[in-house]
Amino acid sequence: DSGVTQTPKHLITATGQRVTLRCSPRSGDLSVYWYQQSLDQGLQFLIQYYNGEERAKGNILERFSAQQFPDLHSELNLSSLELGDSALYFCASSVRDTYEQYFGPGTRLTVT
Amino acid sequence: LAKTTQPISMDSYEGQEVNITCSHNNIATNDYITWYQQFPSQGPRFIIQGYKTKVTNEVASLFIPADRKSSTLSLPRVSLSDTAVYYCLVGDLNAGNMLTFGGGTRLMVKP
View 1 (cartoon, chains in turn green, cyan):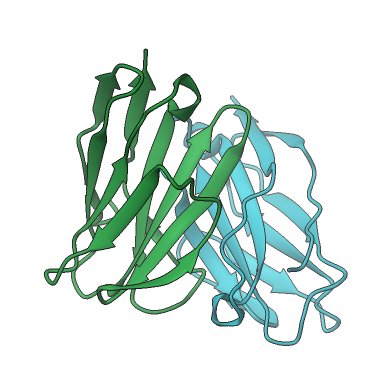
View 2 (cartoon, one colour):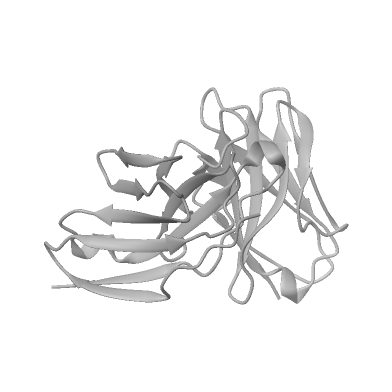
């Protein structure tokens, strides 16, 4: 158990819909990262927040957005969903900017 | 961002020591070397991180030669539960190099 929690574990929705994925980082960690892992793309970095502020952006689509709240939990919002958005979405956290990150169990999103 | 090369797959038997080598010829001065383990449908798990020489923790050892152009993850006495994909990552988050996972090494431990 990494100490990072993600909800929900599974999500099934239809194309065109909007969903919100939630992540609670390890106690004391200020950085939260979001990753997408699909079968054909591997693990892709989406976005990082540090203590409430956006820190870095990766391959995140404009239909996707995220935020980190004052209690440090984070939410990833995915809108106008397409079939290709079906993937595992992982959240990770760390104390500071480091490659030593702790990943949550992921949310499996299925878009039908 | 330093490019890494590691074997696509490896086989081993229970109780053996497994060494997985990663090449990173263009590693930068501030780059760290980090290894992750991932089981199917689970999040990657941080194993070990090092900068030079040798680092050891309760799970693995990481050997880094003086030129830092390669590194070796050593797993002592593997068990069936060590069957997983192992990723070598090289970079410095402070330099803006986000964690980039390549294909990794698929380790199969046989009884």
